[in-house]
Image 1 (cartoon, rainbow, N blue to C red):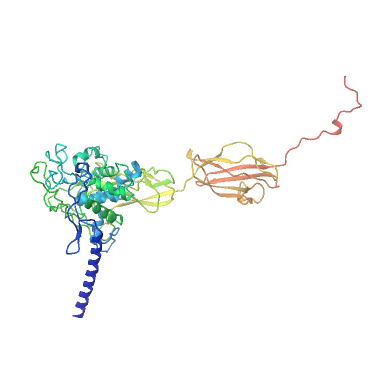
Image 2 (cartoon, rainbow, N blue to C red):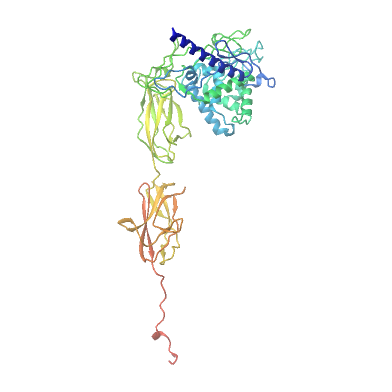
Length: 584
């Protein structure tokens, strides 16, 4: 009985501490963010700002999901043998959706670097707007398996926005609705829409298109999202509500603390909405349009599949041979991704490149069913791992590629950085926990196979003097300029004796002392290397300077030290005689 009492007392203390923490958090929240009797955070009501019409926002100020992040910070990824906490589950973002956010942010970094758009902001908005595309129910192209539609904006509890697209996007020819994973209203999509997956279409139901459009929308006024003021303005322009602003910022900070990739279709589904509507009514099908007389609920989420149990591999790594494979919910048609059993190497040869160069061989993988049949239109993700500065030709360390009709996905060309050694490229199926493939790539140091002097002037000097001409050489590799190649220069004893000479010509170090070996030299961008000035001691003769580079190229240069030549004086017998008579 004492043991039971002790446990009860400890539980009571923990409950009291938790209540204090929750109360403190609640006190710091924006108006409308409270806690329920169980200590869970909830958001009640919306408080739109009065200074922007709904039609000017991305969503038309449509309802959004008010689920708040867990109180505990997320772990970057649950490791083998650990229990997946609610915080870790919320931190997981479906693979294709996460890829779309990161790709969109990378595009904006290049096109609008001053915006400083973090991909976590897109993730926060995507969470609030659609629960990350209904837990990642998307196909290999990133298009949602069913349309995600907001309620009619008919003025009954919402903004009043008459139809602007003839129902082309939202299936409603009387009023507009927010559409897709980022919930754009048709009138905004008409100018903000983007083609994020390169298929030639701008589809608000495609997470790649929608994420890129959201990024451009948030950056459209030259805002710098690394500053608090511009960040708030950008979020409010998306949905003009102070509650919405605070909610998005909470998810933004939550995702910044750590997130990880999970298979498509296994994400946590939202449950609470800002208009207090239950999220249970399915979206109307094109053949059964919703009645325009009353607001309807957003599209019903497909039930998520059971996430694989931790163990054997980290999330996003493609799983191991014993990893469970998520299956589509009963009654749904399997997507091509659902049929993939494994990846096979599609004939990738040895991956080797010189530092600063491009790998001539490209990585290719083939998606197959359990029986070995090729699977087309499956997205394969290639990720560079390890301590390396190598990238793909896109400048990124990851790339997602659709398999062709032969089930083959070819990664962009690899580009070596300056770091030498080995690294790994990991290929996994996006949205499918099946064994991945690892490709080892090697970066060798820059090299030259030929060295040649740029001039042909003889290199001579008098004892104790200095050579007037500096030695300059040009390095090439297979006929091309060999830039940034390491080299050494040594004054050697003889052609067959590469030991450093102890007499004859020399260089000077920083203190002016003689040195006969120079290390750490490098050719410039044109493959040129000019050596420092050479000096001579009192020893005369012919001496050798040997220059060697990484890759085995060598050049031996001849140096001569000799006394200066003087003109001979005429002898007395050759001098003219003053007494001799002049010649006739």
